[in-house]
Image (cartoon, rainbow, N blue to C red; front, top):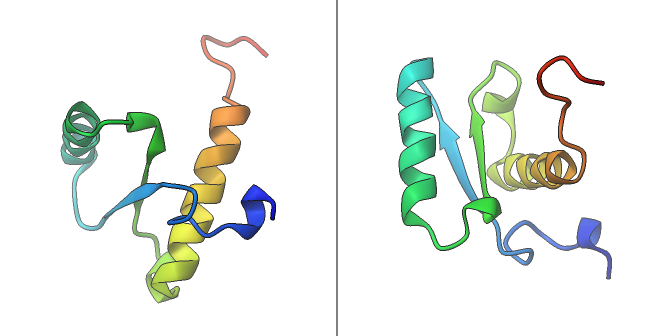
Length: 82
């Protein structure tokens, strides 16, 4: 069974879904959660959008954790480098 076939829960992820917070509040939540969990790399964060508010919770969690895994393996360039 590949990682893609495993559910987010089976891969050991925790997901924090935020709705209605300001950018500043979300940053504080992100830092606070990461400071208290054993493995911050296994915590995926997301915020509500017009699109995802209609999703089933399981689908949202799977999508967020798949994107989190992708971004860990393929981080965006920083400081203008490509």
